[in-house]
Length: 131
Image (cartoon, rainbow, N blue to C red):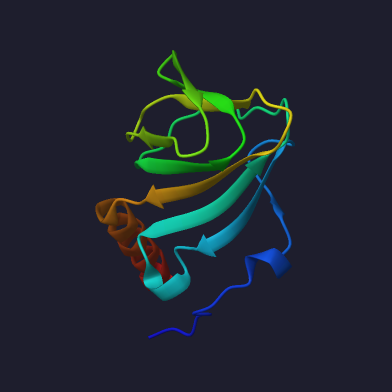
């Protein structure tokens, strides 16, 4: 099994740029960790920040730790507060807006489709076999 850190000190880890200039993230569990088909991130959004509307081929789950905002799921707006859980289906258009005066902080879980991952692995193996 690949080596990975079993204990992370997220408070000491630097924030990485997210999908917009007002979003930052800290990886908690990535696909590279133990060849996982999931990813977990600590995400924060600045007051007034937004994410672009987008879709994924996999489902996501967000848990709001602190702050307030709204999420639009296929055009329907929902209010967010601490304790809110957002469940996004694969292919569902979604975006977030921080409507509060403090950072919106969430845990994000992405669950990748093993069939898509296997297809990528097989395509890469075919490319390498041709070389």
